[in-house]
Image (cartoon, rainbow, N blue to C red; front, top):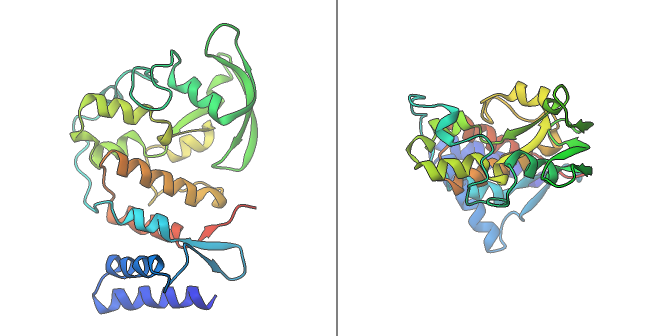
Length: 242
């Protein structure tokens, strides 16, 4: 607890002195690398939470800027829905991206003979920590949706607007940016970023933010100041897996 108190005191001092939070975090990360400061994960209290300094270091590589206009945005700007003609993992395998992610994220999978379709399976929804059944059918398939961790609308206003068509299509179908979740929680999230929406399952929040950072780095996107603050707050209080 004393370590965390020292970190938080340092953060406050950094802000009040005007030297800036980014500079302070960079100093802490440098001290980690030479062994004089925080370890890569720092216990808070007993063993329940930790500070993810590695993720904080990655976050500092992201530019912090204002959003640009939504002008020109449409789902079609990212190519056909669940397009297999992409240069990312699972691309060009003859299966649509939705079924690729269902096969990755579900357990107890039953496949439809002779094609890529998942007929049924079990989903542990990482966003809610609830288990649900997936059953393919006209009234049941939609209960499981595929979320874009960095929503396509958010991506558009933080740099994707300036990407070429092929890169945007890759972004929309990149498994690093996709997660099978319940329809209800995906609808709750909508296009929102980490400043507005975080998974109800607190144990998954650091993974969620880490994945968003990785996607934004991979596609040269940026974050807003509010987004950066929300991400920083999450990464300062990560929960250890049970």
